[in-house]
Image 1 (cartoon, rainbow, N blue to C red):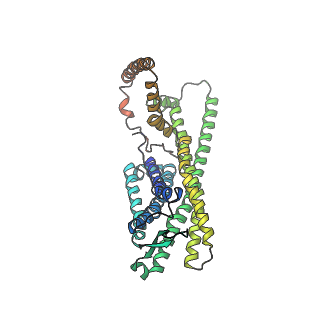
Image 2 (cartoon, one colour):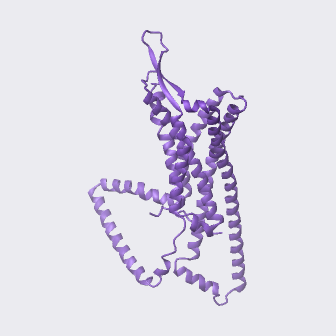
Length: 381
C-alpha cells in the first residue's frame, strides 16, 4: 500500500507496456529464427494474421502507449516540483489510473486500422534445396480493398501522425521538461543553502540568548513528527525521486531519438522523394530495436539505485521471504532460536508500542493528515 501513488501508477504502467512490447513477439522470434524454422514452418491464413498482429501491431500499440506515459510522467513530476499548489487536485491516484486507460485507448484506436488493412494468402515456393518436393510455404500479404481506394492518404496520415505525435513531439517535450526539472532542483538547492547559511549566522550572532520563538516552534513541530531531520530526509527523498525520473527520461530519449529520426526520414522518403537505402535502414532499425530492448532492464537498475522506497519494498517482497525460507530449512535448532528471537522482538515491540501510544495519545489526531501527496515524495518549492 505504501507504493500506491500517482507517480508509481504511471511507472508501473510504463513497465507493463515495455514488458508486453518485448514479451509478445518473443515466442515467434525464438521459434522462427533462433530454432531455425523460418524456412520449413507451416503457415495458414490465420497464423499469418497472428504473426503480423503479435510481432508488429501489438508491440507498436504498447510502445506508443509507453511513449505517451513517459511524457505524462514528466508532466506529472513537473507539476509536483514547480506547481505544488495544484498537485493535490490534478495529480491524484484516481486521475492517474484514468489517464493510463485513456492513453491505452488512444494507442489501440491509433493502431486499430493496421489490424484490418491487410489480407493474407499462403503460397508454395520451391525450397532452397534442389530435391523434389522441397517446397516451403510463404505468407503473401494483400492490402484490403478499402485501403487501395485511399492508399496515399492512408499511409501518409498514419506515418506522419506517428512521426509528429508519437515520437517527435514527446521527445522534444521531454527534453524541455527535463531542463525545467533540473533547473528547478538547482534553484531549490541554492535556496536551501542560502537559508542554512542565514540561519547559522543568526544563531551565531544571538549566542547564548534565551530561546527564540522559532526554536519554540521547531520543538513543537518535532513533537508532531516535523523535526528538522525529518524535513531534511523528506527533501532528500524528493530530490532523489526527481533525479531518478530525470535519469529514466534521459535513457528513454537516448534510445528513442535515433528511432524518431529514422522514422521521420522514412516518412519523408516515402511521401516526398525516395532517397533512402532501405537495406541499410533495415539494419539500423534492427540495431536500434536491440538497444531499446536492452534499455528496459536498465530502468530497473535505476529504480534500485536511486529510490530508497523501491529498494525497501523490493527487499520486503522478494529478498526477505527467500531469507526466511533459507533460515527455516537450515535446521530445527536454528529455527527454534529464530522463533525465540522473534517472540522476544514481538514482545519488545508490543511494549514499545504501548508506551509510545500512551505518551502520544494526545497528539496523534493531529498527525493523521500528515501524509505525502506522492508515494515517492514531493518537493514543495
